[in-house]
Length: 633
Image (tube, rainbow, N blue to C red; front, side, top):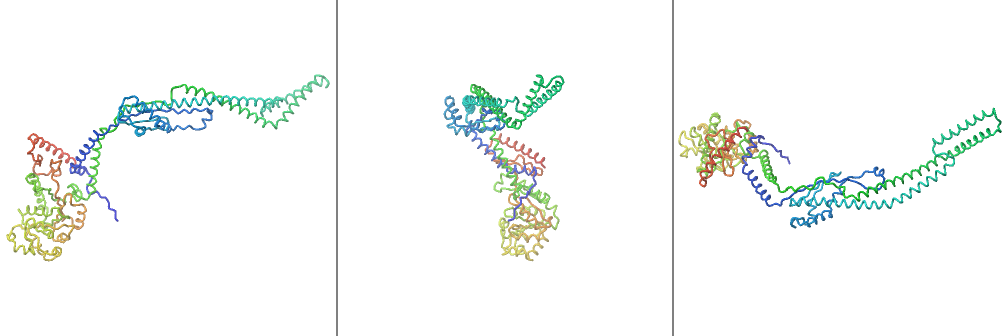
């Protein structure tokens, strides 16, 4: 299936958009006032809702007896989801509700019935770091504020009690752990001391650099003794006591060097054992120090009455959020949406709804006439409308007689659909032309015979010649005549016959203007056959009946567009604003008489003062619309 494309028929300009407003003024105003009335009823009957807000800051402090160095290795989450759930918990809300009930400040009907009803109107937002934004809605401004403040109080008290209980439990745990850590520390210190004593018999410490220094010093000492021995050999014998003393010292030092060199292979393992003892002592010492610090900190928190929750903004006074005066803007928005819908229908719809759309589509120069919609049953109330319609018809006849050549004055009146006004326009053209020109009006709509029936003409004739011979009205020379529908069986065959063509040619030689009323172009082939015998094709465009598709189909059948003219029919001469009718602004520059003060209202029931006021108001609005349309053009 071929997808149909949306095509904008009319140009999107200010004139068209303003025209849509005026054409649908009653509809738009009805939506506006209807929605205003409904909203007003809702505004008066709806329960008022008041909103109160508060802002809390929560300082995240994680009490722990673990060493700070271990705590820094991990990341402490600042997620406040748990705090949000605590704030909305049954205990917090129920305690607050009971407190408000006990104050006896509010009627029972105003106080929420249950925790669930409170939770439905309570909203808590968090920035995931330290702030809680809280709001509460209720039907009372004071109740919203008091309840929200009480929620804060209960939440803070809960955090205080939790902090005291957790601090007390932490201190109790630390008191039990400190003696254990002290015993472990003492045992580690004793083990370290014992290891040092057991490995220090040779008077050296287990350090590679210190061992090398010790060996270097002992070797230097041996060198000094040997140097002194060389000096004493010249003065003393080897059995001299001084010489013997030096020899003993030398032997002792060499013994120490030998012991160190013998223990060198075991130094790394011994040193590791020493470091392990030292590390164990350091760990227990740090744990004991951290426990003591935590015990002091928890003791301060337990004695303190300040929680980690700070109120940045207390609960604000309840502000009315529903229904507010701004709800009336909804009616304006609804009217605007309706106007947008009408714009879409106008620019994308297929029906031709105003003169501007038609002129934009086919060109204003091709439209040579227009005629308003007239209600014949109210002629006594619409005299001015008849006058305007008559002057518009005069204008059309002037354009017709001054712009058509002699061989173009044989006019076929065409319409794509029924009830577009072909017969009426044909008859009006005939009545205007016959006063100055010899004119022939032919009813070629043999299927409907609307013109013949309206004029009560005899339709029993078999041909034009039969009509001319037998009709009394047609016997007069130099007179305009109306030829009724003929009595034939097949109109399509008759229009294709040579007889019909010859009869038309005879009429062309006799009459200055020939006008023929034809059947609908879109439904029957009759009008297409007839068009070959006429030089001018007047297409009747009926307001809100004829479509752009009808125009496309009709224009496609005429390659020579100069022979095609258009007539805009049955448009509203006035904009109707709830019964008050005002001059149609399309013709505000071309009207022949001043009809600005005209109104179709029956003034019999109105006093003279209101009549004067209404007439002045009509003139004032007319002038404003005249100026607006002039600016837009």
